[in-house]
Length: 338
Image (cartoon, rainbow, N blue to C red; front, side, top):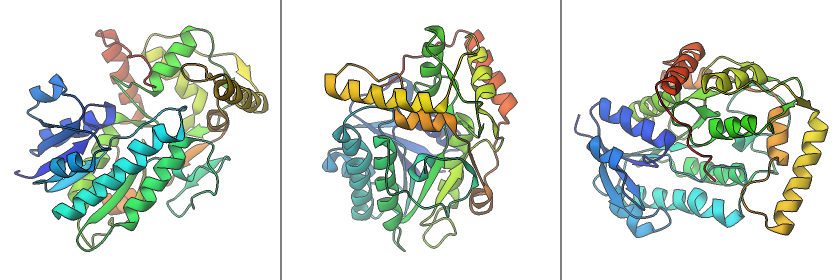
């Protein structure tokens, strides 16, 4: 395999998993970042220096590649519009522009199911679900702009598809698990309502979906110009799953409850306080998080199965057992990334 693939975000959680999997399958991988990551050097990954916000740096990184996996993004629940717009929207625009300028034929973009979150239960929804008119999360808003612009760029010269993995977790997770563990440890985690069915994605399955998309994508291919939900395919009660994940990393289960209405009111109050008083860090609750915790989220994966050949490589029980083994063998939870 002599194909060279640029993976943006390879220094992060999902991007690193995608890059490692591509190396295992014989691809030559390049990464663009402001700084070097020694772990990527050990994998033989070429590291280009620069920022996604610099179009010249992006074009230099894209030059000579056969495909691009654009994974890098700003995640999280709090920040200014500019904080999210620059990496998520402008960064994606620069990747799209560089791919067109350099004649790159394939681009896989990492998106999120939150781009179609309508504030209510989403049970078995498929990719026909429309984008909402309003977002309570800047992350969701900016990822929706990026996804729509990326898919609109699909053409006979540049095939583009978007993947929407839901709530990615696993060993080394810097986002979901550290937040849960830190709040559980501090006694600040509450069950919001009884919990709906939620389908999450272990990082191995999310990376596998990117490999499949890269292999299947081509101008005119069934997946070109489309977005796909990605998950474990095992909807589970949210709070049962949360407690299993907490147990896997040595934390006590969450048992205290709060009503969805009270959680939403707390989110409104917290957002006002953090905005008006410019408090540091993230608020303990937001409107978006309150709605997410109180509603069901699971997806019809038929499109990904048909067009990408997607089947999870790790079932839920195996993924949780891997997480527990990693923790037992000395794996440490990183602090939540802002």
